[in-house]
Length: 461
Picture (cartoon, rainbow, N blue to C red):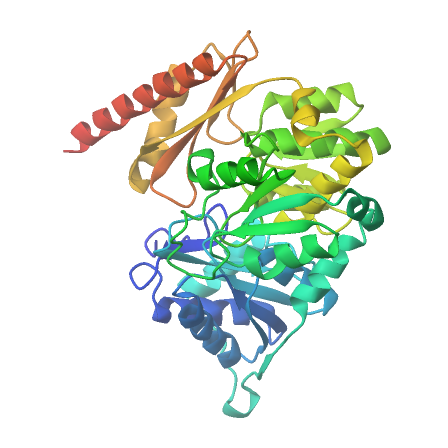
């Protein structure tokens, strides 16, 4: 990490706590961030990971040392902290979270005064301060102050409610099962849904940074308990969150788990019905379904690189009001142009109430694609060479190299192969009109990757 002059990955700074991301490292990053913000006022908060308080304290010491004043919010969902930046008009925020990564990881996200994570250009400024040792420490009598801030979750919940028909949702008396991933979703989502008149049943709602209920990434294979619970109690909806509650994956009343493409496409459909002609921002990892809906309802799809920061920054640049990711991230610009699991849950309930339909029926009316995902281990130092080799092999096919390499086939199937920005792996996203074809694409291209990686390893040996 240090040798490459890179701190920031696809989504903030990530590493294993006390190995790659030590308190000393966090304090040094805090000092670089503080120098960048020039004695600004910053909010600091963290998710439920066991290393969260330790790393937050280290970052705060670095910020204070450069003269920044810190409002410490403690444990809270990332979108609640992002909303607090705008609501309290601070210069930005530093959020201690590794989002969907396993419990041993943690990370640092840096947020600008509009609640959106920094642009790549701003990240480079911080990296230059860090690596060139250009930290500006304050004089002893100008060290920043530390205060606590309370009430941000209430403010966040109230803000979401302004964008939906609360009375209509309440009139339906929906029963919703919330899988909070033993993390910060438990602090906000049950409260939000109860204030929308829903009956709420929770699982994995006890805060525990070891994530005993399931891993923090909400994937279908991790959500069997949620699916079974929805069916067992006859709930109308199930919703599962990641480690910092900015992503949400939905389960319909039959217990079927749906990838984020489908629920985002549903939100997109109803949004475009009321706002034809709007731009819809989505990473190249998303399903063709998203483009199908944009074409059918008069929207314009804008493809981006993978990463919520890129989606947010593109929305900001284009003044777009809606963005979405296949992993369950929905960005609703009228609220805030960041992915927000709570806002997504409220939007889905609002659609169900307006249409007076069950979620399964609404989703079944969309064009059908089957999604399969995979991953292949690949050390970070080999990623670039692997991508070069793979792209060479794809010549002659209909490909995009916006991010990694994506291949579109004539039968409307496709596969995206891209290096992860947060882990030493390659990710594969395949879609097709049959589950068998999608699985076959993941297997085929996973094998190609393994062959290329093995070849490069042997050359290096």
